[in-house]
Image (cartoon, rainbow, N blue to C red; front, top):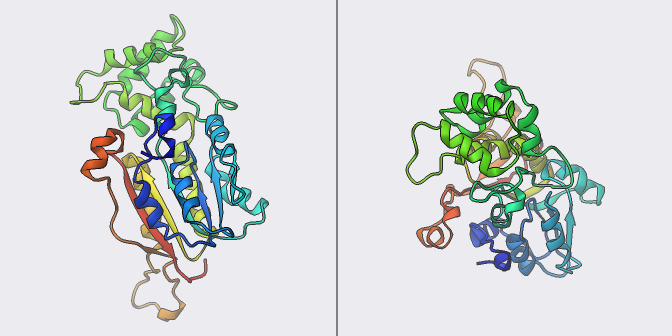
Length: 314
C-alpha cells in the first residue's frame, strides 16, 4: 500500500518501477501519470534537495491531491502526457534523467460511481479522465455511427460480439437515451452470447469505450517519441501497461529504438554510417509477483518494460 492508500489505491509495481529508473539524487524526473501519487512520493524520497520531479495528470482530483504535497522540488502539470515535451520545455527543462508511464486507471476513478468508469455501479455514463473537458461516453454513444461503435469495441476491446453490441446500441438509443453505466452494461450482457470465466460480459466494451473517449492509445503513441527525445544519455524510460494493446505499442517502440539499421549486405555502406541503437533494453519485462496480485487483484495484468537512452544521436 502506498501513500495513495487513503484514497483506496494501491500503486502497482511501486518499488520495481522506481528502482528501474535508477534515481539520482540531483536528477530530473517525470511521473507522467500522477494518479494518487504513489510513484511520485517514492521518487521524491530518493531525490536530494537539488533534484526535480514533474508530474502530469488529466484528472482534477489527482491535481488536487498533487497540490497538497507542498514540496518545492515537485511540479504538477494539469495535462495529459501527450503534451510532455512541450510542457517541460515551457518550464525550462531541456532534458531529463528518467520518465515513468503508469498506464493504469486509478482505483478512485473506478470506485467512484459518478465517474462512470465501472459497470459495478449505476451512474452517469461519463468515463472521462478529465471531467473538465471533452465528450462523455453517453454523448458519444448518442451520436456515433454504428460502424464507428463497432470499430471501437472490436479494436479497443477485442470483443467478439462487437457487431451485435453496436447494432443493439443504435437500436436502443432510437427508443431512449443510453446514459447510465447500468443501462449500457445490461445491453452489452444481452448481446454477449458466450461468457468468459471470471469476467463480466461488459468488461471489454467498457474498456474499449474508455480507451476511445480518452484517446489513450493515440496519446501513448504520441508520448513515446517525445520521451526518447527528452531523455539524457543514460536516462531511463519505464512503462507499465495493463492490456495487450498498450503493451504491443510499447514493446514495438522500444524494440525498434533498440535496433541498429539493417540494410542488405551488398549495399556500399560502412557499418559506422548506419544509425545505432537509441535505446538499450534493461532486463526482461517485469510482472507483479503472487503476493502483490494477492493484495491487489487489479495488478494481475500489469507488465513493465524499461529501456535506457544511449549516446547515439537522434
